[in-house]
Amino acid sequence: MIPVSQMIREGRDAVIAEKFRTGAPAFNPYRKNSKRFLFWQRGADEARARADALLRIGA
Image (tube, rainbow, N blue to C red; front, side, top):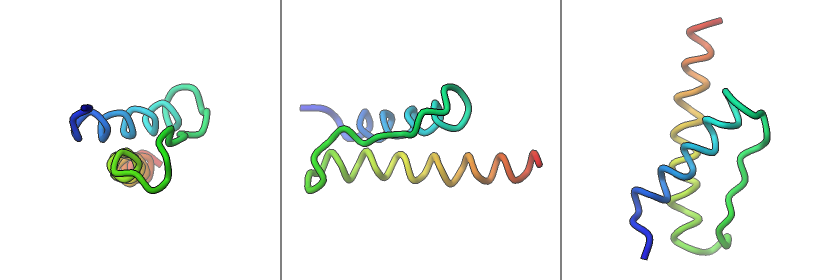
């Protein structure tokens, strides 16, 4: 079983790569109605909000 923190971290890392490294869109690899999907998405949403705030400050 994968810990929740790891799924959140995966989502966060995908968004960081999207915003600051490769530019490839972050893609949730889990099935839409699963808990893994929800936790991955939570990490991605939090990271996306923080990255947007950071980029807004830097502009």
